[in-house]
Amino acid sequence: MSGPARSATTAPASASVTLRPAAEADAGAVADVYLRSYDAALPTVRRAHTDDEVRDFFRYVVVGRGGAWVAEAAGAVVGMMVLEGAELSQLYLDPRWRGRGVGDRFMALAKERSPGGLSLWTFQVNTPAHRFYERHGFTAAERTDGANEEREPDVRYVWRP
Image (cartoon, rainbow, N blue to C red; front, side, top):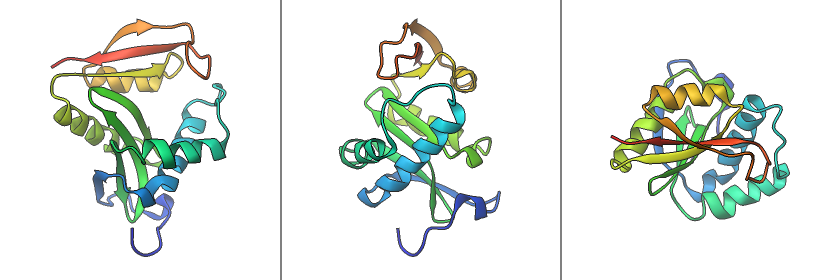
């Protein structure tokens, strides 16, 4: 990314959004999108890791191993997605960018790159995510009682073309 990144709050509503593979230099911004999104969407779900641990995880694991994509608008990262084969393991948007079609574009990209089908996990309390995925043709396939780091019941969704 060249030049200073502008805040997503200063980006005009009609700003062009570009989806692209995440670069090493994006790791901090990707982690920040995750943290803002998680805290806004899941205020009752305790995060299993500190902010610094999350930033390290995104720097060295998520962005470091590839498969991460970013949505960029007006020089700022406003969304992120991680696609590992047929597993959509991360999809987070800056809360200020929800409802602008960015998630729909990520979903179209994921389906294009994994045309045989996709699966993902989301927390059972995240009903907005359920509506989003169901709108995109996903169906609930499995529920757990919280066999994850957060100890929060979750649901696995699948999409088959």
